[in-house]
Amino acid sequence: MAKGKEIAGKYWEKYKKQESPFALYSPFLVCVAAGDLDFRSFNLCISQDYYFLDAFVQAYRLAEDSVERKENKKLKHNLRERTWGFGEVPKMSRPDDTTDKYMDFLVTIACGKVGGEQLVRNQKHGNFAAFTLSATAPYMRLYAHLCDTILTNLDPNMKDANNYGKWLEYYSSQAIKDLAQKTDYVLDILSESLNEEELLTTEKVYHQAMKIQVEFLASRPMFQQTVVPLSRFQILNKSQLTIFSNFSFTCSVEHFSAELGKIAVSTRTQWHDITKQYLEELQQCIESSTTASLPSPTNNGKNFHYDDLTKALEQVAGIEKKRNAKVEESGMLKGVSLDGIKRAGEKLVFRNGCKEFFRKIRNENPNINVHFISSCWCGALIISAFSPDVKASNIHANELMYNEESLTTGKIVKNVESPFDKHQAFMKVQRDISVAVRSSGDQGKHLEVYIGGSVGDLLCLVEADIGIVFGSDSSLRTLRQHFGLSFVPLLQGVVKKQMERVDWKPQLGILYTVESWAEIQSFISGFSKFD
Image 1 (tube, rainbow, N blue to C red):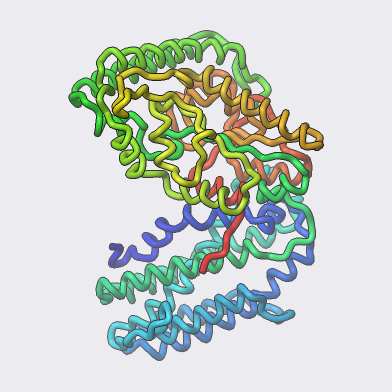
Image 2 (image 1 turned 90 degrees about the horizontal axis):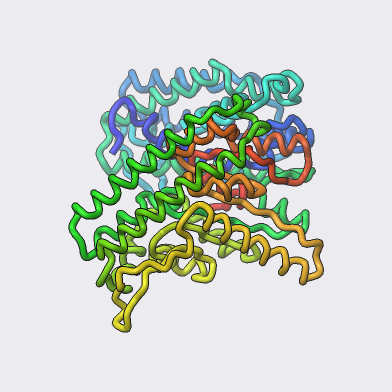
């Protein structure tokens, strides 16, 4: 539990990657970054600032009254005075639904009511004041982070031409950051005397406040077509959207073999030795593949050496096949029950936000096809891990053979053994979808997103309309540098696409990077309101 003078910073770091992408990839901020936001949308947004600031002042006054210690009263008073450093904000229109929601939330918290429950005031320790600060602290932090991130991803040549450059620079200014730090400092001081239950309350309030602020930005009225969320863009362009994903390390935290190793009929030494040899041979393969002399890549995808990369992946394929043969010969996967494999899948630890993303796709976008292409030795493990959100027919992986008693024989049905097998499975699904779309009377248009993070995903990544690299696999990044692949932050690619206002098309050699599944979800599905 966060406690002491770093509590505000810990809350921010905990929820930043989880929530902020839904604002960054919102139609409103993408258009701000592209400089083409309709001024009606912008004016409607800033007209709400008056109500936000008015709610801040009301809450701070209530919080001041709930603090007994003079030093804390002084801190709160200084903070309230600094809040008005924004200058006069014109009062326009009326508060919209999300603004109303935040105003009610803030004043209710300042009165000590959290989650419908009236809490007991501890005036000496200032617990109500701490709750109030938790409800306001994310505001400036979030805006400064969002605008900083947008400015970082903008083409330097386009910053001066951006119609909203001054707004972005204001919220990323040192004055705003100082205000955010001051708020954090006061919250840290007030939190020092709180008990564990009260600290849990401050965290809950902080998180909820951030989500409401993200919802505010994500729900801004728009008067133009945008490239986000991708699922809506796909519907407007009458194209079929298909999402492909690797499994190990992209979806799951651990490699699939680690989970199977817990239930395999073998010693840990066997698993360790085979895994160690495989990793050593793979590393040697990558090193030897990148010693060949090639023209210096420009790292913009134009000098991407596809044929040379394919030759390097042939060596990788040989190592994959060798490892699988050793696993079969060892007999380590013999005698494992199918029920045991299913239970292992159910316990599998996923990357934060991954399962939620695919669940949302299934529930809200049933027309989007989802396929998993993995070199996992056991497709049943993936099926049970995602059950009931993914159909078995959409899993393309190896499989273990079973006897009549549903126990494994130790043999592997090698459906997807190498990078080339992955690529073949990817291309087959593409062809099947093209045929289905054409037979429905449409133009045969479809859009593919491939999400992966390993060397084995490279061929699929570079040939998808949108190849998204998740994670920081060192081997993949080494090959990227040598063969001229270009890694572009996804947000940067989205902003560029909004500026060009054209359909997504494959750009051979250019891949997009993300740091979380929240980025992927916000890009493809957009923001979902919470209760």
